[in-house]
Length: 46
Image (cartoon, rainbow, N blue to C red; front, side, top):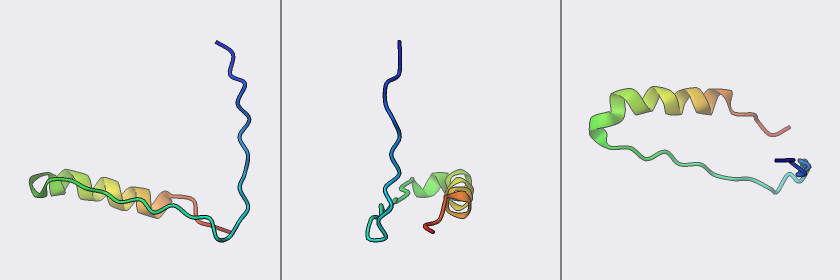
C-alpha cells in the first residue's frame, strides 16, 4: 500500500489540543508514571 499523505505543520499560536488521562484508581500505580512521562516529553509549542 502506498502512503500518499503529506504531513502539514500548523503554525498558529491559537491552535491547541488538551489531552486528559483517565484510569481506575486501582491502576494509579501503573498509569500515573506513564501520564507523567508523556507530559514531560510531549513537544512544547514554540
